[in-house]
Length: 138
Image (tube, rainbow, N blue to C red; front, side, top):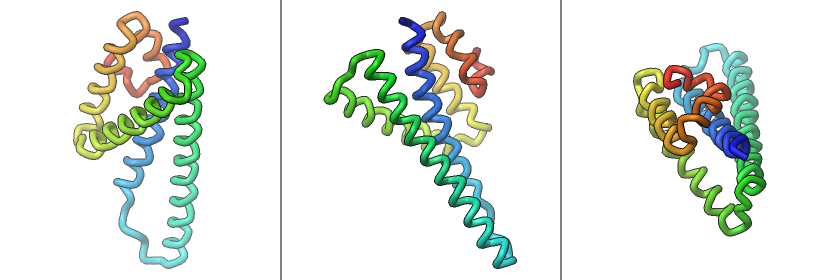
């Protein structure tokens, strides 16, 4: 049973990681090249990359909602609340990433603290294997 909770947490963190990658990528876009052909090619690649990230985020949101329902039987009313809360959390984390200047150290520490509170110490150690980006907080 506890593995279902770890799976639900894993799906949520995957969604967070994808959203963070999108935020970091769009924040670090450099000035366009002077060559028009390269500019067009770069814009096409960036659009494809961001489109893939967006689809992956959508799949992650859907899979975490399905996992929440399968694990916790959230049902239609609570599923909407869960999805709204998940999107709000993604926005909160994205804001932390943008403001974080120390290689996302503050963001990672806040996520690790919240996950430890939610999962407890035993489940936290099992969950950390799934999220190597939090390894400094193990």
